Image (cartoon, rainbow, N blue to C red; front, side):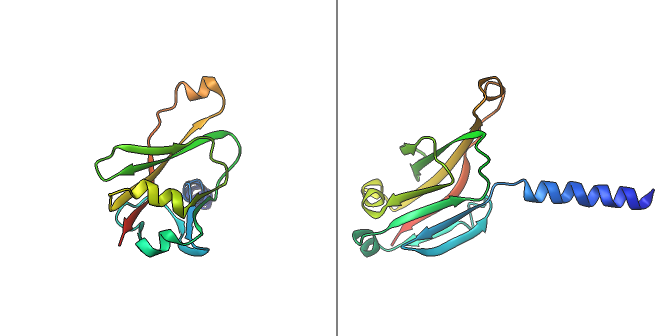
Length: 140
């Protein structure tokens, strides 16, 4: 009986651990944040102003994409004012440096979030959406 209880508790913990959303953030083809979860204090990326003038992009790759959700990516400034959003983001999204430069536009801090809702309208009606923090971009 004890073995079954231990096995079930290990199974539940594993399901909870692997069921969380994970993502990887790369800039200029260099991985900056890998397999991270939501943590506003740790997920900080410093971007040099000169790097935004070069060709390249910021790439966010989501680890879980089962096709059953609509994902929206949002960019806010430090006052939590929505600057831009991207609808129906698939497994990977790339934001060009030129677009990032426009988003900074006098700001020194950008916060990137995403939300997910089920594609099934009956399930989407009962789900509470909460923006999940991906990372904070700080302009040097």
